[in-house]
Amino acid sequence: MAPKTKSSKKSAPTVKRKSVIGSTAKKPKIEAKVAKKVGAGTDPKRVTAILQKLDQAYPEATCELKHENPFQLLISTILSAQCTDVRVNEVTKTLYQKYKTPKDFAYANPSELEQEIRPTGFFRNKTKSIMGASKGILENFHGEVPKTMEEILTLPGVARKTGNVVLGSGYGIASGVVVDTHVIRLSRRLDLTKNEDPKKIEQDLIKIIPQDHWIKFSHQLIWHGRRVCIARKPRCIDCNLESICYSKDKTI
Ligand code: SF4
Image 1 (cartoon, rainbow, N blue to C red):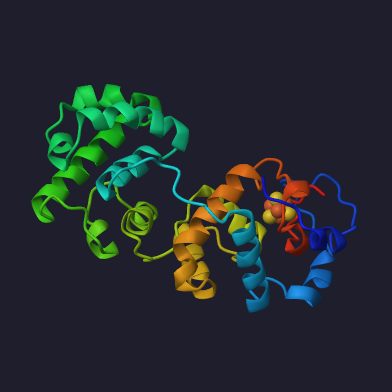
Image 2 (cartoon, helix red, strand yellow):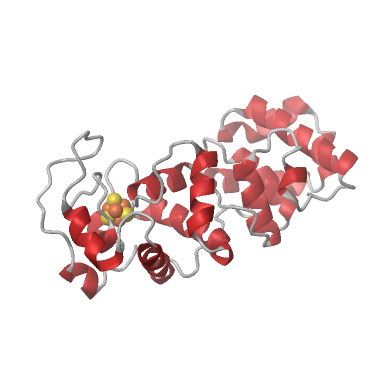
């Protein structure tokens, strides 16, 4: 849980709001008050304040998918579509004992693999992606997960989000910002983007976040989205970003 600082209490907005989740009401006038202190939207001072507060709340934020190498992270990320990391970790605990290399997955029995990953959902499509990506790695990249976005995107079932996860958390290469459902929601709530399309959101974030923060920022936003700024009823009372957040979804 993100600690709430003294300063955030002092500057917390006193505007009383009705239930605002999903509301089409206009943005509260609190934006003007906040803007005086750290700016609004993507003002560099405000972005810096957001990064500092995320660092305070989540100094150790990392990828929550358990993996021992970039290849396992790639498979786990494919499995994580529409599934929790906890569930994926339960499945991969035994899966990676049986399948250890790209070759093992590439020449797996598809029906068996489908049943083994079934608890993660969408198991038929995920089986095709896992086997296809593994074959691509074997045939085109000498059995190693490639280290560039351009190359990794040639693998079946791999889009930018997966590419950024693997390059960032598997290799430590900051090629972009991971834009998952949490990053989409929080970037919009924090007024760092007006866009809804993940590719456009990533471009917006890349412009305002220093590159040496891209990997950590992605993890911190995902942690915040899972623990505090949750989708249905954000726990604003526990949020250390509250003093600089003027989202219409705020619950205090
Ligand atoms: S909506 Fe609430 S929980 Fe989310 S960032 Fe704003 S103040 Fe924090």
